Length: 462
Image (cartoon, one colour):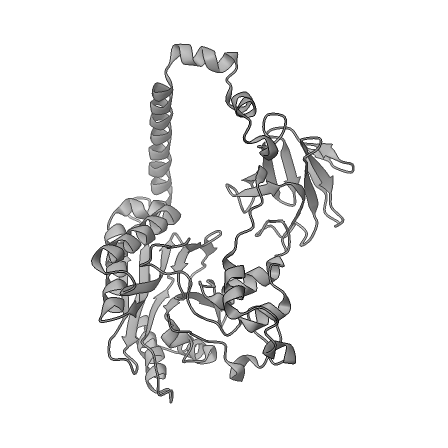
């Protein structure tokens, strides 16, 4: 893959805007004792911390999200360096609001108060001293409540995972479960559960539709526009597609790479898979599932059509429904939101430099090692490969209030044009289509003699 760089020293100076690391120091020039190959191998190495239990948010901004508890101390807060990072609840302290400890010797999980000003509650009682947690105990921090779900303990420990007696004790059923089995078989219980769940979901769906769309109502559709340029390349490898219906708006943008039109085929295939997937109205009711399914299908279809390493693509997709923004990205297509006269990226991407930044925050790379990889913008994740990795999803959907612009851009645009110029285009008069033309014209007027393909989708929220 070609290396790609997009940090402009003209705009940002010598400080990286993404990780606040000084890039013009002598340390930047020193690569240390590790070679580039060794550093990249270190980036992709995985340290596994076996799960000992979970916290599940049952009330609050992150309702439904689960947080893994590992052995030892797990500090809870909103900061990036917290073991359990809870975003969206500003009443939770940034650091050390509380501590969850799994003690492998005593085989128990304990809740401790943190060293911040915020209080921690265990089953509605304030915690001032260590409190042993039981299954499904409720922990309250800020405006959020969490249920504790144990895994390790008396019935199972990772050190005993090879002992069949331990696994038998963990999976053995008690007399209550045996009584149920005498009445109904497991397949019958599963069918009954699925039937009841399906019925409840249908009732909820129709009730929500009646509340959100009363008779005579109707939704205002998002205004959209899109444009692209071939730049100085011989082949246009950027493709886009937009699907709109009563349920919402979906837009997808693909940046292809490959040999002998392989990149063009990969990009076009990816876009078509997404458009086909969102022809089903039900796709808008489970965005994360549909996005994941679409990315997997696009990856399979590219591998089916093209020989290995002949073509691949970065793909980004957004879905807007009921003034909520859902997004998913593989590669380096960038999604951004323009509001209050500021264009803010909401995706990071899958490049070596982004991965280095993440590992630096986790303490897996030293500052010196991270600096040596800041200019490495080669992709490590994209559709069209056997080793296809995970997708960068929204954590929680972004709330939109009307009047904002949502953008999808390939690197041929956001690397060639300053963000201030993009903001000026969005602030000016004109339709979304006119704004998309203006942005692409900025690429065409660039003095760069090696301009890449560039593409943009502009969506205005009604």
